[in-house]
Length: 334
Image (cartoon, rainbow, N blue to C red; front, side):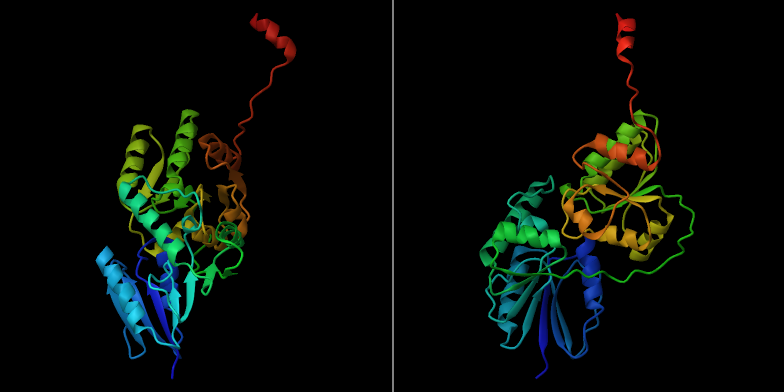
């Protein structure tokens, strides 16, 4: 009997998870059978064969509940279950189960959510789901040593956790292209991606007459509209890009002066590794997740727009030190 692997990924449809899922689906070993649960919104096509079956799941509570019941029903004794979407199975599985944990907020007592009430509810439910359905019988795969430490710190040391990062294939481009894009930030619109302080830093720079170019790759929505409005109102040199193909993102890496990465929390930080591949200088938060994967050329306190702006000025070789007058000169002010 051929080994069958069930992949549960029905809650992944965008961001870094989508990039990694695409790589996973393109690398399915031919010697195994697969049954794959996919998000109905995911724009990745997969050819069904005798060995590969898929089920598309709509973005609704009832559809996901149906998917979990279906998963439980089709599981057989010698199958393996690979939960690629962070969450353990809703109905405890007796088959070999592996959880690929990509979202740090699931294991952190404190987490940063998006501003919308819907996001607060969704993340809270996911945290409760993870907490109630986690099991010491499962294997948990994380992407960095910092995530592994965080898992043990918040969940206990008696879980089976392994560090297992993987990087999608990167298409090399002409690295001698003109650097006409300035600074680059690729991120979704979650609150922890910290666009707010990044834009505030660009305002600080503009107040000093410094107007570096910033290209933001972000999903279309309320935040991107706010960024466009702030950019126009404050005359900031910011370009917002939506719906960009992955190969065009590679072009941006080769045409940019540096990647800036102000995120407050990451389990991996895929753009950091991609920038490293293209030898793009990295200016990033002074956070453990950054040092896990790259060595930035400049770092900053991500909670401080002034710290971010000063890191940009250091990279641009702009002196931001104040001149300290002599003690005697105070008498000139009297």
